Image (cartoon, rainbow, N blue to C red; front, side, top):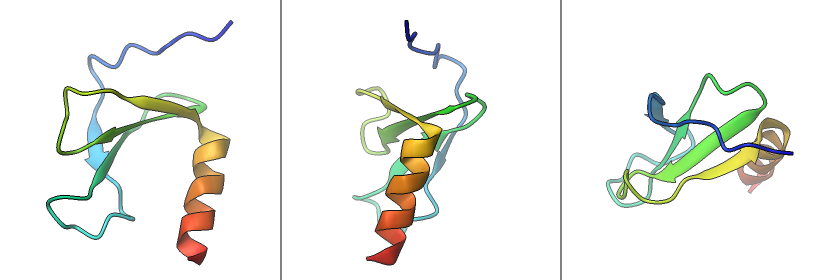
Amino acid sequence: MSRTPDLGAAVWRKSSYSDGGANNCLEVAHDFPGLVPVRDSKNPTGPVLVVAASAWADFVAFAVRR
């Protein structure tokens, strides 16, 4: 059974793969072993997508190749 991590104390940072523009940045949180919480920086109180760290690594590798 999977459990949603408590993100109340999450430390968020902008993804280094965002271009730095004000309107298109992702933020990711660290210190969640095996998971990567992701949110839209424009909506910090909005929904959070939590993905497996391995899936995030695959996504980033694919995006970098583009």
